[in-house]
Image (cartoon, rainbow, N blue to C red):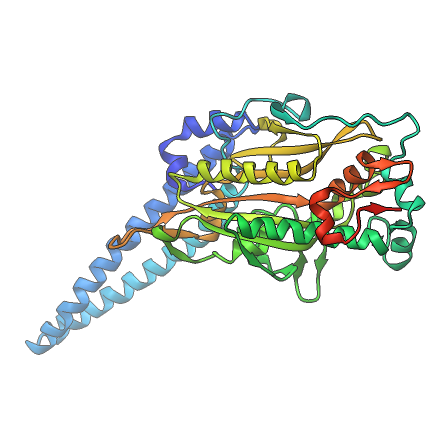
Length: 424
């Protein structure tokens, strides 16, 4: 959520930056400034009346002491009148505050100055590419055929138990999945991240804090009886640990890592590009989250990007890193890097991670702040998160890229976790 001070003081700058995200903000911002002007005017009048009422209240005691009962009574009547006027103004302020908040939360985050304009994936900027593309025969199978061949993931059983997009992992498939989770968590611990095991259901306040609510309800599974939401990513509960928290500047950056299952209603669609593990309603993901000092948050972002790159290198997967254009960025992000790995049998790139700096956008919703020793004023922190990593497409790429006539080779780094070198 953008701050009202930023909107008021840098109106034209905000309008121009939001154009990079293809968001027309001028009309909304004019309404916000008009509402804020009304709010400020009412608040000034209320404060003046409150001050006058306090002054008169102090005089009443003196008037009574001096025996000036009539004057004291008149003063009391004046305070009653002021109270009524203050209440009337307060009643006017409530709907203005609600409308003002609703208008502000409709504005997306400002993109970082390095973000290029654009409308979608075709306009993203490739910043790096690594690894070698595997040379597979024309008979190479896509992962949805490999999982049937080796009986490691069952989509039909998932449909029986729940519905489409809820696969059941079996045997070495289940072991591979668990090995990847443990590998990612162990690598995070080595990099200084504290492991967290959060709830996988959150309340409305948590959904609002990270920007999923109020306008993305339809993308989450909603337990209506208790008004809880199944999380779309561990980013939501882990970042909300710091909602309404004031941190010390010395404690920054705070680094957390969490494994959770993730749930997304919008995931299901038709077409070859979403077959198999390419898109699911439920999937596993390890997430890294940082709360950083504004002066150093982009250093934290680069460190997170390097961490994710290191994981993909250790898995020996060909990859590329993209800096997203304005039109392909999320509502909350200021700068996002996407990681994609090459799927040899599908002959296309698969997104496996997004690493983002939200600057103070989420922190303003969360009221996540910090202050230096001795300071009375608090400052909004910066929040960052990244997938490290999302498992379905990583598994798809491992299966497809490492297939041989005798089975599927397990990446060397995972063998200590799986206990086997081949899926056969």
